Image 1 (cartoon, rainbow, N blue to C red):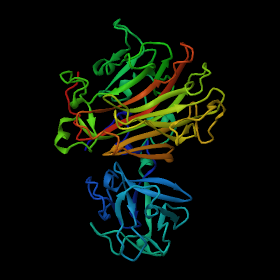
Image 2: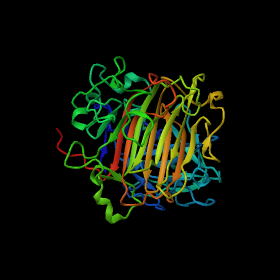
Image 3: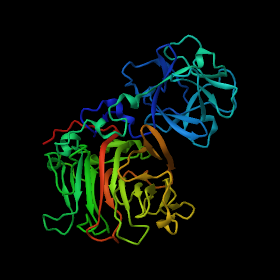
Image 4: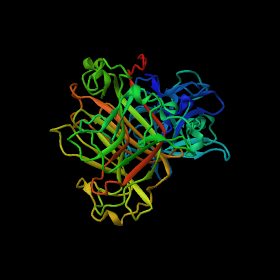
Length: 479
């Protein structure tokens, strides 16, 4: 699988996990061998082992995403999978550490991160539900040597793990805008690779009654407008949208300034809705997967919401925007919202999962703040009174990651490399194992407020945007 970057062109490839929770290489202290998840096969139930540490930290099999489970416990997810380090039932010497489906409620996957030496990043990992056992590297290291549980002993060198935060190796790993190496004098396409996106803007220059679409070639020819431009100070890619304006279709009530993923990368012989231009979940039949431009997917973004609407008294709409989506042909597996009330200091972050037609009702999930009554899949009353203490302020930089692996949808909110929120949705019953359907990412502003004044606006600045798919071929001839 090729990692296809859509971020500042000079940012190092190791920044693939920037918008997720912090990502680590876990090296057995002083040995040059790290915990390895064994290729990209994602084999559930396989034992993890030691393998020579990649000196450039580019081996994704050694990348472990740290998920905060609260109370000082963490799970470690193999990068770009849904599999976590699992100590198994109970505990005994030489009980294998395996990869199992991540489950935030499974204490076999919860590890106490206990520092061994102050002033270092060397830790011992003790099993939450049996503190008599810790992760152990088992004697002299060698490639392929298994990782086990063994009786807890902080003086045991086999249980001492030196953590390297690979996010810290990337210039894009913090929220300081100057760290993204963006040229404030350049158009967005000169700072970001936009060759597999087109842009919707709420104008109608061709008089067809609908919003304009700026296709790949035009977008990448230094395109800028009043709605899409480079910030003069930070170099961020800015999306600015008014409530009034043209919509993309008769099926929507809302305006947008939003990128739509186009895996054809400018090859206009492939239509927008062709499978080659879109992707599918690996839950579809394996015999149909080669028909698509990619399988499964991840989109990471680092951004700040600078402005939201304020002129409506309709609390479930005012201040509400969508900053990231997965869209299917007719439905939306995820819409990620930022929502701030006019009198509050901070905005909530939440998402909706819409199953395919005929597969049930839409489901809503809180991430930051508590705007959603999850039991009833609706907004709480009197949102205008809510100012989430864990929310995000305007102009505050944060990151999101939207990832699909088969039937699993994973959503992460993070900041400065630390996870703020993480939710999973099992989509096995959502109807997306249909090979006639297709998927694409969207990012920017979809302004979900039709009740504020027409000249009211929302604005968001993106510092990082990147996407990836299995089997994605990005070698098309462009322009």
